[in-house]
Length: 113
Image 1 (tube, rainbow, N blue to C red):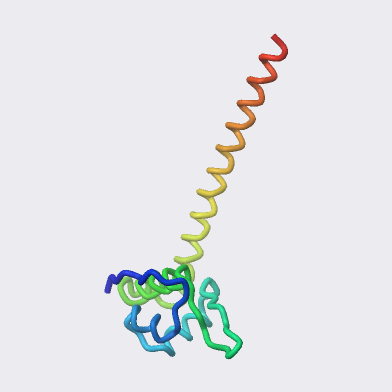
Image 2: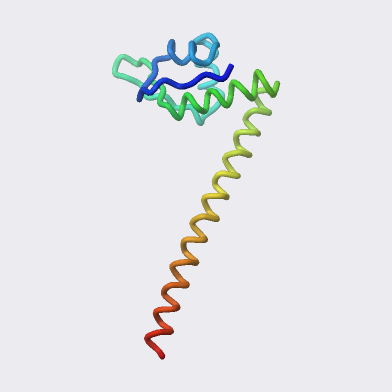
């Protein structure tokens, strides 16, 4: 079930369903259930999925089909993964801030001595 994503910016729903190995209506249903999947709409109201949407759909497919989660369980897993990613980002920002403060304190110490 692991497939590579073609090097494109946008994918139509037929391409997405082929890559994922599910029907188009399944992709539309997942889109309605999982708010992290937000395809762009054209003027003719056609869905265009970005690479990040396709990656998210692949995670959803694996949670539902490989790991046998329910829709609710998959939503919980995704929100848990999202909160872990946000926490890691917060830690990185905190480290950068502390490094900047450390540099400024050293500069102040040099000025005072």
